[in-house]
Length: 269
Picture (tube, rainbow, N blue to C red):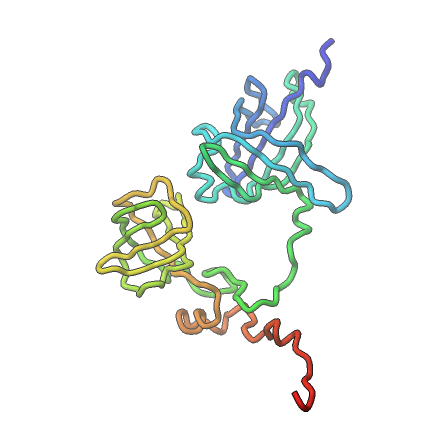
């Protein structure tokens, strides 16, 4: 009689925030588990899962190859897998109903290089590490365009056309805002397939030169894009650039560390 351990395989189920499901298995044939087909693929493998009792965080790493049938670099760059739910099960391929869930959590930080990727797996107890309440800091805690910011990102955006791409530098035409207006903002593809953060913005003649934080694969001359104004979260930017000081979510008048460590001086000091 065959040992059950010899008929075990691992099944991965990724559910993106948009509801799309990706299912892989390290078995050599497709498996149907709970109505979902798990395809043979090398798109996902995992290192030893570190699982503990109590409130300790269960974290591991997932590694794999980027492929058209699995995870693509374009999907990862555009953030479509950020925060995706992950379930890993041990399944008896002779009887798929015989399975055991060994990990449940989310995908964390994803790194990519050389046609492969490495992603952090965050267990359910990761939620306990998140701060609750507001942080006391000088910079604004809101994200530009969200409900607490109160501004419309669409209103503070402009359509542009890519003229040239050289590494992380993108030359575009469109809009009449001064240099620096889109620094710390974002470049969006019109079809929503890409969102790239902008590091610097400079107007030169009749074109605008954008320096992105990283080069963007697939972006080319002729593409139509949308540029969203940038916010560096400083109080002067909120007041003078956007006129939105009433919604500022920071504490600009917090005392500095020098003030906190100061001590009374003597009369002869």
